[in-house]
Image 1: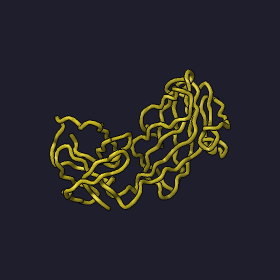
Image 2: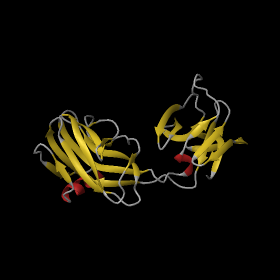
Image 3: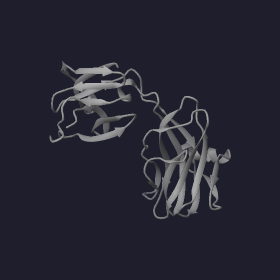
Image 4: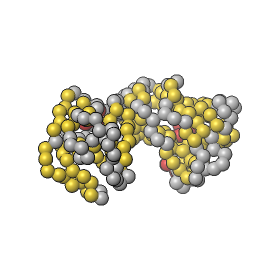
Length: 240
């Protein structure tokens, strides 16, 4: 851990406040004691891990995909797509499956997974991703304003490092399945301040959140509470 300090963001710049933060680190847990309506920034010595991208069109060309129901799978070139290409399965009925086999690196044992896709309306499918036979995250509805998008990253999932892992998209609403890439965000070597719990000394759930902040919880290995300001997750604050 590099620093734990009081302060606030003024635009995009962090402004430190006076006072020493009372905290205790035990293993991967960080226990913080702080006054009501105050904010604390925890700075680590290492950066957040970078994502690993798998282009669906490359997986198709390598023969690492199977499609059920006799459906055809095709790659297309287009500006705006990640890597300049994307993958399409037209008119997929409910229950159809698109399964990719991905050899993950030896050092990738756990990750959050997000899917890059091409949205449009109408005619797009809704799919449920499963990883090694277990559902991962919530269904992805590809209907929306025309463009290339990425789904929210699901919860952390354990992978089989150094082996083939199966990722299956099962159609829950019929339509075109339009995939761009699969994004693995490594989570087995998180910075020490983010591995465990951020614990607050008192319970202030009945109090109002200060103007300009909104609360959002993200599940990593354990629950961590962040606060969002100016559209970015900057401060780890009192749970109000």
